[in-house]
Image 1 (cartoon, rainbow, N blue to C red):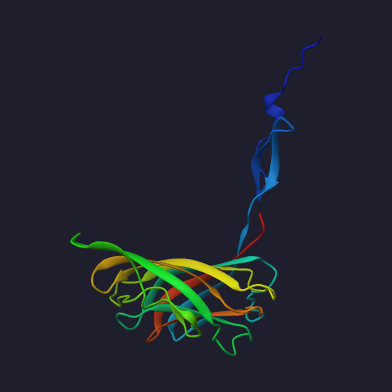
Image 2 (cartoon, one colour; image 1 turned 135 degrees about the vertical axis):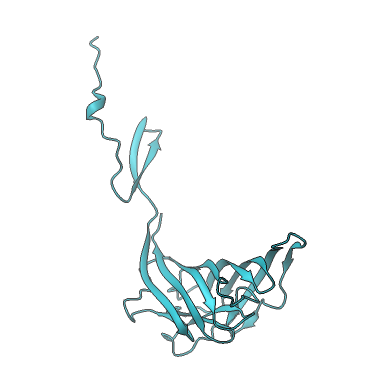
Length: 220
């Protein structure tokens, strides 16, 4: 039986953009598979801003059935006022009202700069039980020149007219009492109407600076 020689120089293993190498046991070799894709939709930058709003169909914002998952990333959110919360709310009428009923849970881990105190605790003062107000991520964000908050919020299938709208997120910030505070938030918007807008603001005062990016995530 003749022996076939394999020319390694002609074997291209470089994946095409947007794909990932995956092992296919049935084919006894490698094949390509489309990877999960996260697409940047919109970037908004605060500058003494009372609110930042992402409204479907406005200013190139997409928040509909184009993607099943949407992710917001917060970068260096700096409040104008000291010891405030970074908050958000949902809308089902393209931003005319931000008042979707939400049930949420939130806990936080904190550690002081000097190492004297560290803890993990449930934050009963920040959760909501069918509350329509703005949901806070964390309390007491400092407004010192070097103080800010960063994190992300993931919203699932906001365009559904069958199911409620799950979300979860986390934000870390420089607490006004010189400590790091990481908040973990989960919950749902209790509506079967399509959510088509999300607004962010501080509990008091403006967002002096910071960037919020909206991404859409395709099915894997």
